[in-house]
Amino acid sequence: MQQKSLTILGATGSIGQSTLDVVRQHPQRFRIEALVANANIAQLAADAREFHARLAVTADPARYHQLRDALAGTGIEVAAGPQAVLEAAGRPVDQLMAAIVGVAGLEPTLAAVAAGNTILLANKECLVSAGELFMARARRHGVDVVPVDSEHNAIMQCFERDNAPAVEKIILTASGGPFRTRPLETLHEVTPEEALKHPNWDMGAKITIDSATLMNKGLELMEAWHLYPVEVEQLDAIIHPQSIVHSLVAYADGSVLAQLGTPDMRTPIAVALAWPERLPTNVARLDLAALGQLVFEPIDEERFPAPRLALETLRRGGSAGAILNAANEEAVSAFLQRRLRFSGIVPLVEQVLEAAERTGGIAALQDIDDVRAADEVGRRLARELVLRMSRAAE
Ligand code: NDP
Image (cartoon, rainbow, N blue to C red; front, side, top):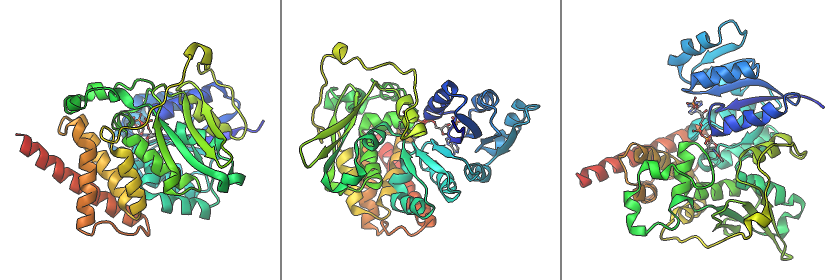
């Protein structure tokens, strides 16, 4: 068995740690080239030591000395700052796990694409903000993009590429988050603590809030469109509160293929690491008899407008995705800092898109500078709106 070299961007996060846990179970199969993170130096240094990484990088230059001291005497190379992150991502490896949160992950992942590294893609914001550009670069460099997001990983397992014309629909499942049944009129009172408690998945803060608003499903619909050869009209989403069926593909002959499993990201991560082989993991096994039944329901658009907004944004094209993503990142951060109500997150993103459209801010994306500019427009408009809303509430 050939050992694969692996770099992890976002090593200290939820996906990064689950990836290392899978690697921990298969030390003979993987060799860690670089671990990249931002603020959590203690975890980064501990992992670099445990996995004998060749390189450990923090994106924050101010933390360089802390990381260097923590790894003194180990022989592990240490670097810091955004340029060091790009260089780490660009080191040739067999596989690179792209698991930085937010659009901050885009440029490092593009650096990995340019180096020809196979991308295991957790960072959905890359595709939401710059999907066409990203996939075009991957094609140009002959790079495989293997989805890690549980829904897209499920679709990968069910989507018969040779039968693509016979695919009628891709159906993403959504848990519905913690507020699926909460009275609508109380959604404005939701606190960050309540929204950070996901019923099924243990994830980083940003994606947990996105799951509560269902913006996560919106981002995933956009991600699916970039990953699979389907029209926007063929994308669907359905609520499945148990998170057992991870997504489905419906075919013209009436067959519907689904992938099932207990909600544990180590399964899709193991699939991505080994595909098309299967790697044993110690995740809890699915016991359907004990479960008894699988529950599904349609998405209530009044409660959860984000999936509709995402599909409209896909149809709008150009920089609309980057603006939506930036506005959402700002809105989530404002909510977590108690500067925006939970019920204001998705309406704010919609207002930002409307304002951008009105002022001619939505344009074609030619290169990464256009993505940066669109991201800046989305953030500026979102910050202005948060400020205006908080002044109005005073
Ligand atoms: P976390 O918040 O748990 O972790 C984020 C990681 O990114 C941390 O390692 C953090 O470092 C690092 N990071 C943040 N900013 C920077 C930066 N500027 N440069 C380098 N590293 C940085 O996020 P998740 O693991 O939950 O999510 C990661 C991505 O995967 C997201 O795009 C998310 O949507 C996607 N995803 C996550 C799933 C999950 O189950 N968690 C499921 C499917 C997709 P530090 O902690 O040291 O500051």
